[in-house]
Image (cartoon, rainbow, N blue to C red; front, side, top):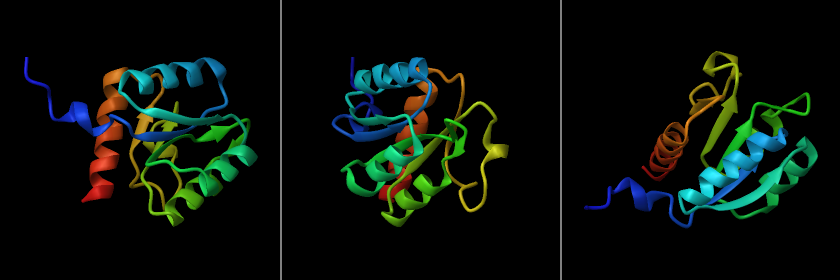
Length: 129
């Protein structure tokens, strides 16, 4: 079987994970490890997420839109300032994303491993283009 060219895109990629629900966070980590990614975090609070977004080395971020009752947008802004791609994770769909982030990719909870992989690859490729 010939390997799909998508299989190499995520191998070794460092992914910042911001998710306050432990079960979802563990599921995300498992999926990312299956893709060959390295997980940065996870951060379960806005303050630690902001610190990681500013200081950690990563290529892409997955951000829960609502972290412990706080909107994630300050973290998204910190990542955007670094010109790094990000993916929003939400149970509310893309309609709940605020400007100026409406053009960013969204995975709607509950998402499948295939949905997450496709969305991450798209975000990384768009950032490299």
